[in-house]
Amino acid sequence: MLEAFQMTALAISRTSLFLRLRSTTDNSIIHGLRELQTFAKLCASGRRPKANINVEIVDDGLPKDYRLQIFKVNSRRLDSIICKAIGKGRAQAEKLILTGKVQINEENMPKKAAYYVQESDIIDIWKQPVEGNAKFAEVHRIEIINYALTEQGYDINLKSWKNFYVQNWRDKN
Image (cartoon, rainbow, N blue to C red):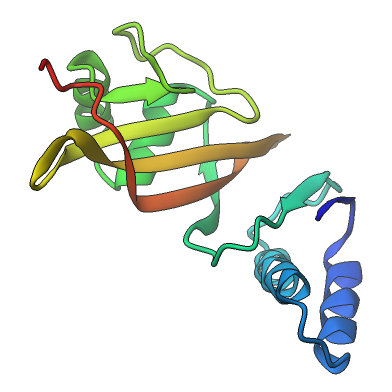
């Protein structure tokens, strides 16, 4: 189920209410409802840019294991996004980039913090190898959905997975 929505908070709230009142057993509608409710809450709390944006919701039938977040940052630089994601300072974020613990779109990053994130970028921040199988690693994954320029900087809409498993690119074996 692939649909593109361009809605305001009011339209999302109305759609959400309609889907809740309608009895259904279709899981794709239920997952779509969860997405809409999360988006509506973000809009209602003022954590959303005022401009309409295109949000593409893809339902693969799996349970939702990520969080939709909005980061308010001064620039789209990689180190500022990582800083917000891990909740630590910029020096720590730069250290992660310089030590090769960050991948973008499953490719090794050049060891510099001056990369500007784009829509659909997938950022993996290496945490540790999986216990018992060093060929895989636990990462913090961030998928940039889109961004909007505001008076205060950028509002970056993203999906965030705290514990995500990928092939261990730091494994030397």
